[in-house]
Length: 185
Image 1 (tube, one colour):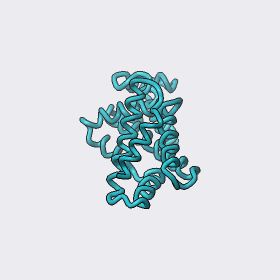
Image 2: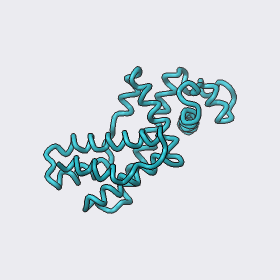
Image 3: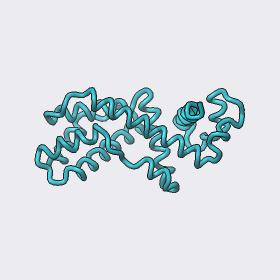
């Protein structure tokens, strides 16, 4: 039961952060949003740092589950177009619906992690099936340092998502074409 309540509170904190920003994320705001008695969040996450750590841990769990599911259901990457399609889909997911809310929270937490190394350690890119598929794709095409190129490519995709999250709209497909062409050079 404790872990279920902690998960509920972390999910609710994620929602509060997406809607209210880092300043709006308080124990009381989470209690209100979850319709729980005042002090509940504080009982599970005693400090603001503990609340942020719980939120970031949950965010990474959700992101990893999404990436593993997407890579597991996608056909193998055979062509550049397959990779472009996959990255376009990822960007669209990160810019709409629940993915947009998580993106807002993710970027707020990333900025906060500059001052909180314990958050940075949780947020660092993780190995997942999607990352492995991109790395394998690049390595099969003779890219010398597929690991670093994968990291750079996915960081650029993340930057494009951030830009569109702030400025609105979708990332144009041509942007992905250019990124992949650069990664393959």
